[in-house]
Length: 173
Image (cartoon, rainbow, N blue to C red; front, side, top):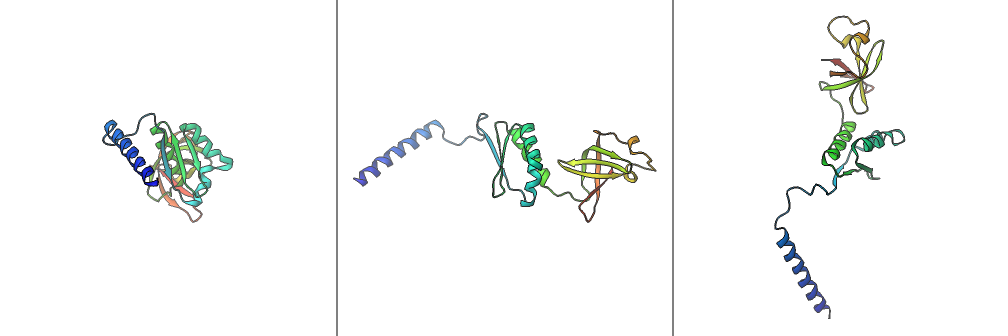
């Protein structure tokens, strides 16, 4: 009786495989535009809090901005899914930028977020700001940083120092 069941199951399985091969002989190069896209990122454990943000603020704004679904599992895996491949990739790039370490010598196109008497704070990566001191804003003496930059302005900056407290010091290029 068991042999007969296994024989019938084998015939059915071979019939299904034959029909599948008649429909599509080789796998498609790309999945359907209607299929959900999924990416999994495994960031360093100590950076998961930065991804989520205070009270989930960072992850909620990223979900709204990219129209994706983002889940952080207990083991630290970040799963990003959505219908639009470019939006999923945008969310993944954003998360990778949050978790990456900035190196001396790197250049960024940043946005001026705050201006104080001694310089301007420029956001170079999501959630990462650096200070452009007035002495590094241009050639010559700069008395007032408001004369050189405005809030919201995009500026090209270079990391010239990361101090022992992890603060990023920038200069305008």
